Image 1 (cartoon, rainbow, N blue to C red):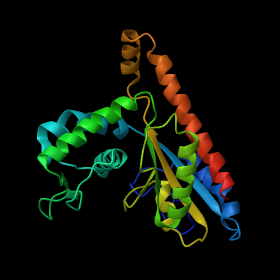
Image 2 (image 1 turned 45 degrees about the horizontal axis):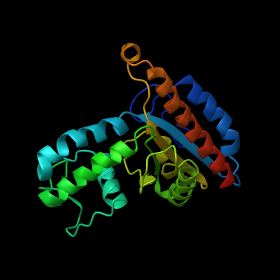
Image 3 (image 1 turned 180 degrees about the horizontal axis):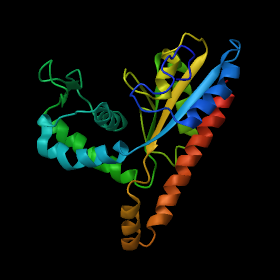
Length: 246
């Protein structure tokens, strides 16, 4: 909706009403937007439960299901590819993930049972070693790729002791129906628009569940606030590095 060529002024791409704050921000942005000499850099910060959900799912089911395990989301593939890269696990059959038929919406790990057992063992070790650290990743569109990759590496190197160990600090965000800012730089004719997305671990789900957890674990909120503070630090450092790269 921020690009002047976006015609639907009341709803986003998924049909949801556009919040008033977004309209206010659009009006503020337009003063800079209409000046072609100014480059515009936009970051969309997200928190996602998938960064907690998928490692847990893989740790419970990958060994049990082995080569029949269904990778039904690209991030599951990314988690396993990350472990393979970090632990230098050799594999020779390519691609690493394959479809059992062209029409299915999932892939399987293209390794032997013995290789999958090794990957699973290292996955558990990886999860254990990264307890207390924040998982994250950056996403880019094609116009933002070079900028985002450089930014992601600089932020990661600066906060490495607080963030998950990772080989993949950024991913190509190729989803066509996604409403995030990361697609914006590929959705407008304006030059010098660079949009990226920063995904981090979701902290709060159901408030009543959070209260129940805090009653069972004395330092629950203390640990939760630590994660929140690191997430804030991650965003702040990202903005600082974005300004340096202008």
